[in-house]
Image 1 (tube, rainbow, N blue to C red):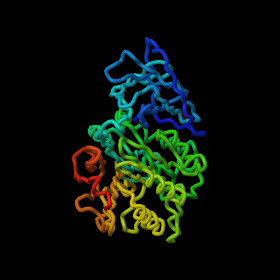
Image 2 (tube, rainbow, N blue to C red):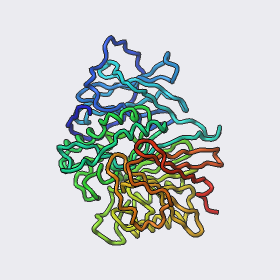
Image 3 (tube, rainbow, N blue to C red):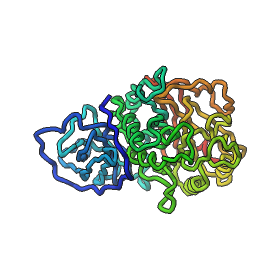
Length: 457
């Protein structure tokens, strides 16, 4: 495990305008102890890619990149100073990219190259519209990442383990990974201070087995209760502004919130990869306390729900994949399933039916087991909810007796695991291939859902 740094988070990270700089000749390399975590590849668009890195102390970070196989021409991002106020993190914008290209990159710290023992690469998205069919691609997904730290863990058996799962994910060669919440577990000592929150995010991000995956696979994320606040936390959590700051410092999504007029949207956002649009929902910022036990209680909240319905209705994507921390379609009213928020859940499902939005699929985490849930809808195509959990947290076994009447047979997994989705085929015949793997990378099940199956006549 790399050296841990307790730091503070003050304010949000501004976008930094990159600059094309000449290559710096360096006779020496940056000190080995200067890198805390990363580099990580964040969002990808046609004309820019965001990268991220964290240092162990104040430093200047920069990325040099070039088109794969063509090192004669190189570009540099602007140099960004890492500071305690930003948990020693830096977001580095590569904006000299062209659509549909693959790039190799190198990390510079304090103006000197920092040697990394694994490949560093990223890609820009392709300009396929009006030109060709969208390319096939693969995403990895999972949730619930607990990284042990005995001094702050509860006594007894270690809750986290099998960090080699990140190596297994990398072996599947996904184009990007979607983290479905509980991506770190804030502890009692962490919840109420910037120092504690920053320490926990730093500690989880520094797992050695994770670093190669960060370096060459793009990453997008949502949160759930444990990376938002205490267990089962809701909109009343007093320090949610601090965890929002930390989330934005440690991840590199392309957008956050419901727009300039309503910054209260937490981590809500959206992005597109080829012909698939992803909707990243916040199931904590507006959420009413679970103990309300009323049909009227908010889960996503009306402003976020309206944004989602508007965005789904206007989307032209073949598949519209909605990622949310908790299970949406499981009818069992247990733990924090959406079914406990009966009125709002019914509002969402009725609106999807009334507007006849095609191609919707839900992704969820939280439950410490994996399963595929199917909801039949008379006169409309069936909805699916692909739950992927846990990555390194301990698995739960209670789902064996849970009344999920929509569970697709053969998809329940009660061990640490991860999943992938392959988007394949020509535009008019697209299909999703869903797979789940053990922590060691053994395939456990596979199902295919075609675009035609997600359209109503």
